[in-house]
Length: 449
Image 1: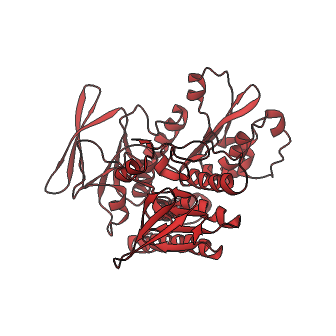
Image 2: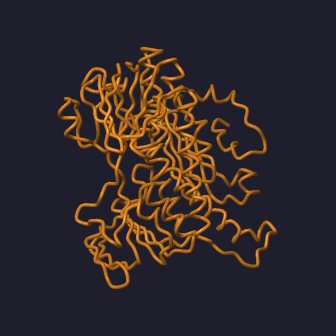
Image 3: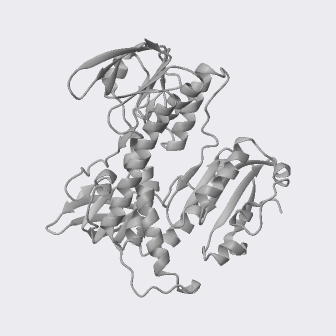
């Protein structure tokens, strides 16, 4: 049998490519080494959001007196929290595989190596191998943790995978890296009662965002008890008898940070099987496999999607790539992928989210922008629900919405509507026709009044 599509890796990108191909009536094979759902399901989106769901409710219960809810005692049962985390991972992984099987995708668990643009060899746990042929091959190898140069992982210098596997919360932890991963783990741990210190090399946390967003979140993190150090370099990490000592430097001042563990959260990088790519002649660089807007590599009939292509390492971006790829091959030759309207969300408490251009990027491009801003404080639902501070910021260029940022409760959900507006290049006049229900938090998205 010759498959129309063979997908290697069942992360969000590979999953979406296989599903879309099957929906379009094609014969699809997907091969996954062991983790159905990929990094997102097992080491990223799902387990971290499960943990954050628990810590958020714990934090809310302890601060519910204003709403007339008085709890005489509260406790954070980390064992129960871990069970919730494990269950959500299992449900997600089973859901990925079942959705594929329900559409008739052949699902194989093994390790696939590409022999040629039309053939793969699958190695199974028991030692046997099989070869399968396909008209089109998709690489969806995912990503891996990116270590910090000069600070290798050890017993007390850990990555996010190790932290997710811990059965006991540390009393204190230092986080190196103020990007999305570091901020989310810092949020969970602080709300769970861990003493957290967050260290970021750049001038502000979330370096890719505008300073008003970063400054807002920094203030909120500090309210949770997190000690935030920006524009700070970690010069040395030493393990002691009882923990870890960081020697840090800010400007000309050197100081020490002590903690039980250090979490290195300086991001992830594409997982590249270089020997295989070199043998096939697939072009790549350190930032990932090079693809065109159709997701095709330098070798005809070989495509790549998801984190392995570099760029924005997000599950929903990978899924969009996967869908576009199968649409291009089997339905719409004009289908193309663009990162211009990929939403970015950080699930801190409160969260932040963005789509399109930042104000900083727009200025760098020389674009004249009209910036509209709305505060949560003027929204009756935000006040009724005690959501605290927050804001929505929208950037218009020549009357067209080109970017938006939200800092505050429910930001990841709210950004979806503005993402649709950015993707469709909607104008202020278009948005005036948008009727938003009252009273809702979504009224903060009314940016044309």
